Length: 222
Ligand code: ADP
Image (cartoon, rainbow, N blue to C red; front, side, top):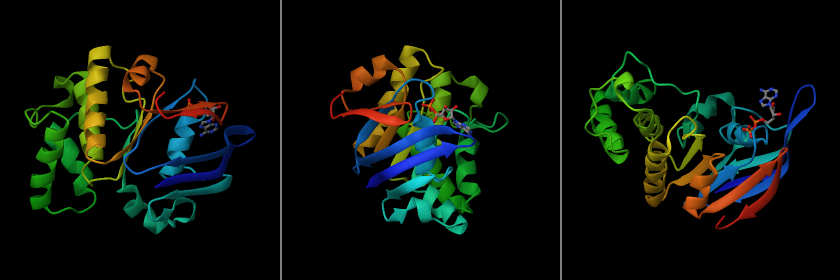
């Protein structure tokens, strides 16, 4: 489903962020990508969504060869992958509903579809009762679940969440992880970038450990 083949990413002048990585992730897997800061985790995620291009190597996702996508194909490709990155903030002047709807509006979705999809994805993340609230009225964990809902609007085959629990206390963090597990239960592949040991240990799912750009270990039930 997802395949990195001998991928190296060099940032100028000479940072080897990712070093000769070969990795396969099957449809429906839940994979935690762990490692200390600077290990190359975010770079790997950015390579997968074609936000960065590898210096060497090939990346495949579903029917796409990510490394050969043309600019015009990117929007379509990116709809297949839901992204939850820390710097994707909510719009403070928009309600929860409007924040999620916005992701559909920018793609030209008709109002009828928006009316259908937005409450559905907010129900999935357990926020069906907060449609008219504003982000500042929500806890950090709830805000992060809105971000996840927004990533779900195009029914992606893959969700990549980069440190989604980064700023959360352990109860809110667990709520976010439970939502990711639920989405995974629908058959969506989940890639969770984290350095939260407690969460990874609790998951008992596949763990890929990166260090200085390389994959140091890959355990089925880490
Ligand atoms: P992680 O997500 O594991 O913390 P990153 O992928 O963010 O690691 O970073 C891997 C390495 O690449 C680090 O040394 C980092 O400083 C470097 N790096 C990341 N992004 C850039 C960039 N845009 N330009 C230059 N160096 C970068």
